[in-house]
Length: 142
Image (cartoon, rainbow, N blue to C red):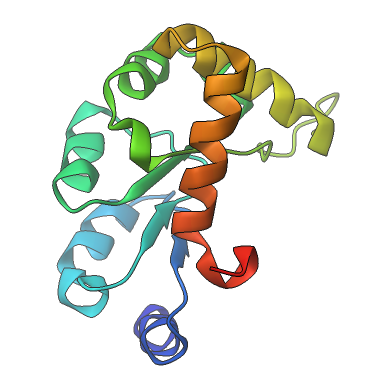
């Protein structure tokens, strides 16, 4: 269950990576805030709105954006304004006929984010590498 995952993340000092989707998922997540209040939280494949992004920002959570960032103006605006040190990127997407996702696509997501933020590609690479190490220190050797 979700609460058991929170306990494991606490015990092992791991981030809580969340994909929040479906009827009632957001409300249920918010109801259990105490269970993850002191964890590093990564909102995987963020597709929420401005109010959800603000809620996460107030708590210092990471937002991770995928390929949809290139197509969705609402997400572009959120990514443009969200704290730089809490941004992550990924290539995940919903499986649909005719749509594929490849690890190499993360470059395009990073390029989109760089343009939105007014960063050079090197600035984007550096910031995202720092953010990834902060979100997943066990994987980065930190």
